Length: 493
Figure 1 (cartoon, helix red, strand yellow):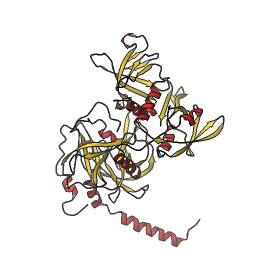
Figure 2: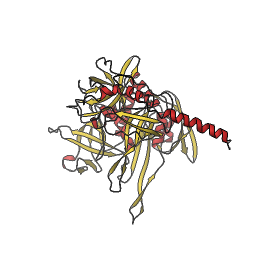
Figure 3: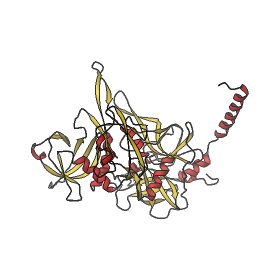
Figure 4: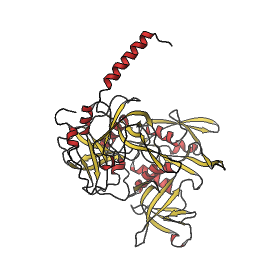
C-alpha cells in the first residue's frame, strides 16, 4: 500500500526528532549502574564444579581511584546488586563460582569503593549459567540496587556492558546494540534465552550487567563467541556477545531465592536421543557433512509421570511438544523448559506413519527423581555394576569393550585394568578444550551430571580405585551410542 508524501514527511520528521533525542549519551544512568556492579572474587576452589548517576562526586570518581587488591584470588568475574523482599543479593554467572570451596572465606565481592564483602551461595542453575549470592554482613551505603528492564528489548537498541575484564580492569564500560534475541547457545550450559549484542565483553565480564540507556538491566553478560580459522585456531569474535535476557533472568532469580536455591523445573521421566554421524562427500577435497536422525523417545524412567502413558511409544520419533515442532533435541528441550511443573502437556509421536498425540502431566523435579535417572542410565550399561550400599557413588567395572583410562586403552582381562571397584569423584565432560566436570557426592549428583552432559553424547568420569593406596585419579569415557563412529545426544527430563 502506498502512503502519501505528507505522511512520509511526518514520519521522517518524527523519526529524526526521536533519533536526536536519543543521541544524548546516558552518562548519569551509567554512573548510577556502576555503583550497582561488583567484582566477584573466588579465593578458595575445588578441582571440580558444584552442580550451581548523580552530580558532584559521581560513582565513576570512586570507581577508578585505586586498583582492587586481588592478591590470592584464584578466579574472578563480575556481578550486580538486586533487591528482593527488602534484602540485597548479588547476581552472577554460575561458572564464576561453581568451583568455589564450601569453606568460609571462599567468595567475596568488591564494591565500587573497593570495600570487600564475604558472600555465601544462595543457589543457582548451571543450565542457565546463573547464580545468586548473599551478603554475610549488611552491605554499606555505597551499594546501589539495579532494576530489571520491564519493556521488551528491541533489535538495534543501545546497550552497555559493565564488568571487570581479565580481572584487572574493574568498572569497564563498553557500548553496542542488540543484534538479535532468543539465541540458542551450544555447549553443556547456558542454552536458551540469550540476547546477542555488540557490546564487547571478555573473560572477567561474566555475570556483569548489560544495561539500557536508562540504567535498567537488559541481560546478564554470559558468553562470548569463537570461530574456527582454516588452521583450526579458535578466533574470538568481539562483536558477537551473549547475555541472558532480563525477563528470563528475573524469573530464575525469583525461583532461586524462594525455592531453596533451585529453579522450579518439571519432571516427566523421559529419555530422548538423537544420533548423528559424519559422511564424506568429497574424497579429493576431504569434505564431510553431518547427517542427523530425528529425535526419538528412547526410554522412560520407572516410577515417573510418563512411565505408563509413554512406554508404548519407545523408539518412535517425537514430532511435536505442545504443538510446537521439534526437529532437534535442542528444540525439544526448549519446549520442555517452557513447561510449568504440575501442568498438562502434549507429546505428538510418529507411529506407524501417523501422528499420535498423547497427553500427560508432570511434577516438580526432586532429588529422588535425579537418583532414578542415574539408576536408569547406569544400570543399562552391562560393563558397570552399581553398588548402593554406601552413600558414595561406586560401581564395579568389568569392561567388555574399549574405554579410555587416562592415556591408555583397556578392556576385559588386561592386567591391572581388569575387574575393579571404583568410587566416583566427578562426572561431566573433559578434554583438550573443555572441562565441565561436576562433583559427585551422592547418586542425585550423578543424575544431575548426566542431565547437564547428555547433549555432548558422552559422559566422562573421575574415579579412584577402591584399595589403591596411592589414590590415583583415573578417568574414562562412556559413549552413549556404544559406537565411536556415531554420536548419540541424550536428554533426560
